[in-house]
Figure (cartoon, rainbow, N blue to C red):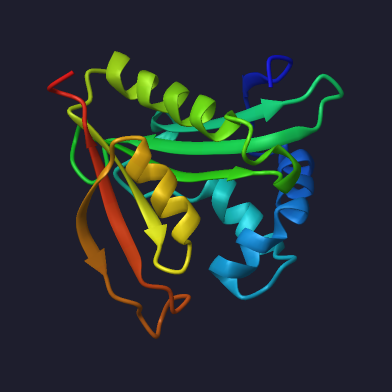
Length: 169
């Protein structure tokens, strides 16, 4: 894990590296989208953000191995759902990199970015079926804020919105 660097990614220039990671982490992609190999998911992960978020409010971070491949990806935005608040859109790891503390390293990096930006909190949405992720975020100190029911118009997954208060630390 010590040889993995957290680097800034570019949606266009790093598309292939992120797509390769998503292919390797197809278990999660299938859990969320119903399809293991989903180029639309990769594009959305790298490019989609709420209209209130400008280009400078989107942060794409790669967990880069010495060979240039990605062991993980962390995407976050600021000013959502309210001005000043942060939201982690996705933290995904290569299955070979899970369980070694890399998820904690990436999450802490993003949390520290939010804290340095004076954010009062950071949120993440966790799929109801992703019990491992829920346990991870609970251990990171996130607390359940609300549950968003599955919608027929979307992917059919119920999500739990978890929140970490950054003001009391």
